[in-house]
Length: 262
Image (cartoon, rainbow, N blue to C red; front, side, top):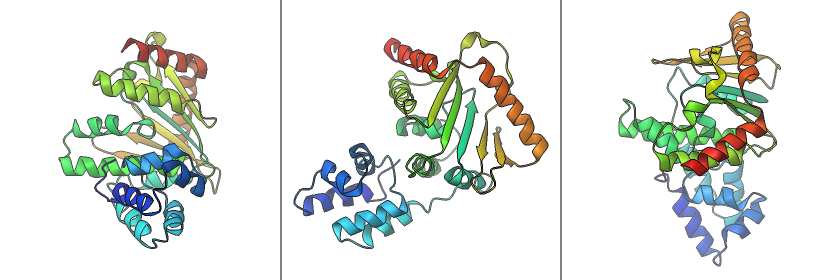
Protein backbone atom coordinates (compact mmCIF):
# COMPACT_ATOMS: atom_id res chain seq x y z
CA UNK A 1 0.00 0.00 0.00
CA UNK A 2 1.29 3.45 -0.74
CA UNK A 3 1.82 5.79 2.20
CA UNK A 4 0.62 8.99 0.49
CA UNK A 5 -2.59 8.94 2.58
CA UNK A 6 -0.66 10.60 5.42
CA UNK A 7 -1.61 8.03 8.06
CA UNK A 8 1.94 6.69 8.71
CA UNK A 9 3.43 10.16 9.13
CA UNK A 10 0.60 11.33 11.41
CA UNK A 11 0.82 8.26 13.65
CA UNK A 12 4.59 8.64 14.07
CA UNK A 13 4.17 12.35 14.83
CA UNK A 14 1.43 11.74 17.39
CA UNK A 15 3.50 9.08 19.16
CA UNK A 16 6.42 11.50 19.38
CA UNK A 17 4.09 14.24 20.62
CA UNK A 18 2.81 11.95 23.37
CA UNK A 19 6.07 11.59 25.23
CA UNK A 20 7.73 9.44 22.64
CA UNK A 21 5.18 6.64 23.01
CA UNK A 22 6.57 3.44 21.49
CA UNK A 23 4.79 1.19 19.02
CA UNK A 24 4.60 -1.43 21.77
CA UNK A 25 2.91 1.01 24.17
CA UNK A 26 0.42 2.11 21.51
CA UNK A 27 -0.35 -1.51 20.67
CA UNK A 28 -1.10 -2.20 24.35
CA UNK A 29 -3.46 0.78 24.51
CA UNK A 30 -5.34 -0.53 21.47
CA UNK A 31 -5.18 -4.22 22.48
CA UNK A 32 -3.59 -5.12 19.13
CA UNK A 33 -0.23 -6.53 18.07
CA UNK A 34 2.87 -4.37 17.69
CA UNK A 35 3.25 -5.74 14.15
CA UNK A 36 -0.15 -4.26 13.24
CA UNK A 37 0.98 -0.80 14.43
CA UNK A 38 4.12 -1.24 12.32
CA UNK A 39 1.96 -2.01 9.29
CA UNK A 40 -0.06 1.17 9.87
CA UNK A 41 3.13 3.22 10.13
CA UNK A 42 4.69 1.77 6.97
CA UNK A 43 1.51 2.12 4.94
CA UNK A 44 1.04 -1.61 4.48
CA UNK A 45 -2.43 -1.52 6.05
CA UNK A 46 -5.12 1.08 6.64
CA UNK A 47 -6.70 1.00 10.11
CA UNK A 48 -10.27 -0.24 10.29
CA UNK A 49 -12.83 2.51 11.15
CA UNK A 50 -13.22 1.39 14.79
CA UNK A 51 -9.44 1.27 15.19
CA UNK A 52 -9.21 4.79 13.77
CA UNK A 53 -11.74 5.96 16.39
CA UNK A 54 -9.67 4.29 19.11
CA UNK A 55 -6.48 5.93 17.84
CA UNK A 56 -8.15 9.34 17.92
CA UNK A 57 -9.27 8.59 21.49
CA UNK A 58 -5.77 7.60 22.60
CA UNK A 59 -4.18 10.68 21.06
CA UNK A 60 -7.13 13.07 21.68
CA UNK A 61 -6.90 13.87 17.99
CA UNK A 62 -10.51 13.39 16.83
CA UNK A 63 -11.47 13.52 14.03
CA UNK A 64 -7.99 13.63 12.44
CA UNK A 65 -7.18 9.93 12.04
CA UNK A 66 -10.80 9.01 11.33
CA UNK A 67 -10.88 11.48 8.43
CA UNK A 68 -7.56 10.23 7.05
CA UNK A 69 -8.81 6.64 7.16
CA UNK A 70 -12.12 7.56 5.53
CA UNK A 71 -10.29 9.36 2.71
CA UNK A 72 -7.88 6.44 2.25
CA UNK A 73 -10.79 4.05 1.88
CA UNK A 74 -12.51 6.09 -0.82
CA UNK A 75 -10.63 4.26 -3.57
CA UNK A 76 -13.45 2.38 -5.30
CA UNK A 77 -13.01 -0.99 -7.05
CA UNK A 78 -14.19 -1.25 -10.67
CA UNK A 79 -17.95 -1.79 -11.03
CA UNK A 80 -17.59 -5.45 -12.03
CA UNK A 81 -15.53 -6.21 -8.90
CA UNK A 82 -17.37 -4.09 -6.34
CA UNK A 83 -19.72 -6.78 -4.98
CA UNK A 84 -16.91 -9.18 -4.04
CA UNK A 85 -15.02 -7.06 -1.41
CA UNK A 86 -18.38 -6.53 0.28
CA UNK A 87 -18.86 -10.32 0.38
CA UNK A 88 -15.32 -10.86 1.72
CA UNK A 89 -15.78 -8.29 4.48
CA UNK A 90 -18.71 -10.17 6.03
CA UNK A 91 -18.23 -13.80 4.94
CA UNK A 92 -17.81 -16.50 7.58
CA UNK A 93 -15.57 -18.56 5.29
CA UNK A 94 -13.62 -17.90 2.10
CA UNK A 95 -12.10 -20.41 -0.31
CA UNK A 96 -9.76 -19.29 -3.09
CA UNK A 97 -7.93 -21.13 -5.83
CA UNK A 98 -5.51 -19.59 -8.31
CA UNK A 99 -3.38 -21.63 -10.72
CA UNK A 100 -1.13 -18.74 -11.82
CA UNK A 101 -0.49 -16.25 -9.01
CA UNK A 102 -0.75 -15.93 -5.24
CA UNK A 103 -4.34 -15.16 -4.16
CA UNK A 104 -4.85 -11.45 -3.47
CA UNK A 105 -5.65 -11.87 0.22
CA UNK A 106 -2.24 -13.48 0.75
CA UNK A 107 -0.17 -11.08 -1.34
CA UNK A 108 2.53 -8.91 0.22
CA UNK A 109 2.62 -5.26 -0.73
CA UNK A 110 5.70 -5.78 -2.94
CA UNK A 111 4.20 -8.80 -4.71
CA UNK A 112 0.85 -7.07 -5.26
CA UNK A 113 2.57 -3.98 -6.62
CA UNK A 114 4.64 -6.07 -9.04
CA UNK A 115 1.54 -7.91 -10.26
CA UNK A 116 -0.55 -4.76 -10.72
CA UNK A 117 2.22 -2.83 -12.46
CA UNK A 118 2.96 -5.71 -14.84
CA UNK A 119 -0.32 -5.31 -16.72
CA UNK A 120 -1.93 -2.57 -18.76
CA UNK A 121 -3.01 -0.36 -15.86
CA UNK A 122 -1.64 3.16 -15.61
CA UNK A 123 0.75 3.63 -12.66
CA UNK A 124 -1.84 5.75 -10.84
CA UNK A 125 -4.59 3.16 -11.35
CA UNK A 126 -2.26 0.32 -10.30
CA UNK A 127 -1.46 2.19 -7.06
CA UNK A 128 -5.18 2.75 -6.47
CA UNK A 129 -5.88 -0.97 -6.89
CA UNK A 130 -2.97 -1.72 -4.55
CA UNK A 131 -4.62 0.38 -1.85
CA UNK A 132 -7.87 -1.49 -2.40
CA UNK A 133 -6.15 -4.87 -2.20
CA UNK A 134 -4.41 -4.07 1.09
CA UNK A 135 -7.66 -2.68 2.52
CA UNK A 136 -9.42 -5.92 1.58
CA UNK A 137 -6.82 -7.89 3.50
CA UNK A 138 -7.35 -5.73 6.57
CA UNK A 139 -11.14 -6.10 6.28
CA UNK A 140 -10.78 -9.90 6.28
CA UNK A 141 -7.92 -10.66 8.66
CA UNK A 142 -8.17 -7.79 11.17
CA UNK A 143 -11.71 -8.55 12.27
CA UNK A 144 -12.43 -9.59 15.84
CA UNK A 145 -13.65 -12.90 14.38
CA UNK A 146 -11.99 -13.36 10.98
CA UNK A 147 -13.47 -15.88 8.56
CA UNK A 148 -12.03 -19.33 8.03
CA UNK A 149 -9.92 -18.93 4.89
CA UNK A 150 -8.71 -21.78 2.71
CA UNK A 151 -6.36 -21.25 -0.21
CA UNK A 152 -5.22 -23.78 -2.81
CA UNK A 153 -2.27 -22.61 -4.90
CA UNK A 154 -0.50 -24.38 -7.74
CA UNK A 155 3.18 -25.09 -7.06
CA UNK A 156 4.14 -23.33 -10.30
CA UNK A 157 2.58 -20.09 -9.03
CA UNK A 158 4.80 -20.06 -5.95
CA UNK A 159 7.99 -19.29 -7.86
CA UNK A 160 6.74 -16.91 -10.54
CA UNK A 161 8.37 -13.48 -10.26
CA UNK A 162 11.45 -11.69 -8.98
CA UNK A 163 13.28 -14.01 -6.51
CA UNK A 164 13.63 -11.28 -3.86
CA UNK A 165 9.93 -10.49 -3.95
CA UNK A 166 8.97 -14.16 -4.16
CA UNK A 167 11.09 -15.07 -1.14
CA UNK A 168 9.35 -12.46 1.02
CA UNK A 169 6.01 -13.60 -0.38
CA UNK A 170 6.60 -17.26 0.46
CA UNK A 171 7.73 -16.37 3.98
CA UNK A 172 4.52 -14.38 4.39
CA UNK A 173 2.39 -17.31 3.21
CA UNK A 174 4.19 -19.66 5.60
CA UNK A 175 3.54 -17.24 8.48
CA UNK A 176 -0.11 -16.78 7.54
CA UNK A 177 -0.59 -20.54 7.34
CA UNK A 178 0.20 -20.84 11.07
CA UNK A 179 -2.98 -18.92 11.92
CA UNK A 180 -5.76 -21.11 13.24
CA UNK A 181 -8.30 -19.81 10.71
CA UNK A 182 -6.03 -19.85 7.66
CA UNK A 183 -5.45 -23.05 5.68
CA UNK A 184 -2.99 -23.00 2.79
CA UNK A 185 -2.57 -26.00 0.49
CA UNK A 186 -0.34 -26.48 -2.52
CA UNK A 187 -1.22 -28.46 -5.62
CA UNK A 188 2.08 -30.18 -6.51
CA UNK A 189 3.50 -30.07 -10.02
CA UNK A 190 2.99 -33.82 -10.42
CA UNK A 191 -0.73 -33.67 -9.57
CA UNK A 192 -1.66 -33.97 -13.24
CA UNK A 193 -4.68 -32.34 -14.86
CA UNK A 194 -7.36 -30.98 -12.54
CA UNK A 195 -10.39 -28.62 -12.75
CA UNK A 196 -8.48 -25.74 -11.18
CA UNK A 197 -6.44 -25.34 -14.34
CA UNK A 198 -9.53 -23.83 -15.97
CA UNK A 199 -8.87 -20.61 -14.07
CA UNK A 200 -9.08 -18.88 -10.68
CA UNK A 201 -12.26 -18.88 -8.64
CA UNK A 202 -13.47 -18.10 -5.14
CA UNK A 203 -16.28 -19.28 -2.88
CA UNK A 204 -17.65 -17.49 0.18
CA UNK A 205 -20.18 -18.43 2.84
CA UNK A 206 -22.53 -15.56 3.63
CA UNK A 207 -22.94 -14.60 7.28
CA UNK A 208 -26.62 -13.67 7.11
CA UNK A 209 -28.02 -16.64 5.19
CA UNK A 210 -25.33 -19.30 5.44
CA UNK A 211 -25.56 -19.64 1.66
CA UNK A 212 -22.62 -19.77 -0.72
CA UNK A 213 -21.70 -17.46 -3.59
CA UNK A 214 -18.79 -17.68 -6.03
CA UNK A 215 -16.58 -15.41 -8.06
CA UNK A 216 -14.69 -16.21 -11.26
CA UNK A 217 -12.10 -14.21 -13.18
CA UNK A 218 -11.01 -13.98 -16.80
CA UNK A 219 -8.90 -11.72 -19.03
CA UNK A 220 -11.56 -9.00 -19.22
CA UNK A 221 -13.29 -8.93 -15.86
CA UNK A 222 -14.65 -11.03 -13.03
CA UNK A 223 -18.23 -11.81 -12.12
CA UNK A 224 -20.19 -12.79 -9.05
CA UNK A 225 -21.80 -16.24 -9.28
CA UNK A 226 -25.07 -16.69 -7.41
CA UNK A 227 -27.07 -19.14 -9.54
CA UNK A 228 -27.28 -22.37 -7.49
CA UNK A 229 -26.28 -24.68 -10.37
CA UNK A 230 -23.19 -22.62 -11.17
CA UNK A 231 -22.21 -22.34 -7.50
CA UNK A 232 -22.61 -26.12 -7.24
CA UNK A 233 -20.24 -26.54 -10.21
CA UNK A 234 -17.62 -24.43 -8.41
CA UNK A 235 -18.16 -26.49 -5.26
CA UNK A 236 -17.48 -29.67 -7.25
CA UNK A 237 -14.33 -28.13 -8.72
CA UNK A 238 -13.18 -27.24 -5.21
CA UNK A 239 -13.76 -30.79 -3.99
CA UNK A 240 -11.72 -32.14 -6.88
CA UNK A 241 -8.92 -29.68 -6.12
CA UNK A 242 -8.91 -30.60 -2.44
CA UNK A 243 -8.36 -34.20 -3.48
CA UNK A 244 -5.11 -33.45 -5.33
CA UNK A 245 -3.70 -30.70 -3.06
CA UNK A 246 -1.14 -31.50 -0.39
CA UNK A 247 -2.27 -31.43 3.26
CA UNK A 248 -1.65 -28.26 5.26
CA UNK A 249 1.58 -29.31 6.99
CA UNK A 250 3.12 -30.81 3.85
CA UNK A 251 2.22 -27.65 1.95
CA UNK A 252 3.93 -25.46 4.54
CA UNK A 253 7.00 -27.71 4.43
CA UNK A 254 7.15 -27.34 0.65
CA UNK A 255 6.86 -23.56 0.89
CA UNK A 256 9.64 -23.34 3.49
CA UNK A 257 11.83 -25.59 1.37
CA UNK A 258 11.32 -23.29 -1.61
CA UNK A 259 12.31 -20.32 0.57
CA UNK A 260 15.62 -21.98 1.40
CA UNK A 261 16.28 -22.72 -2.27
CA UNK A 262 15.80 -19.11 -3.39
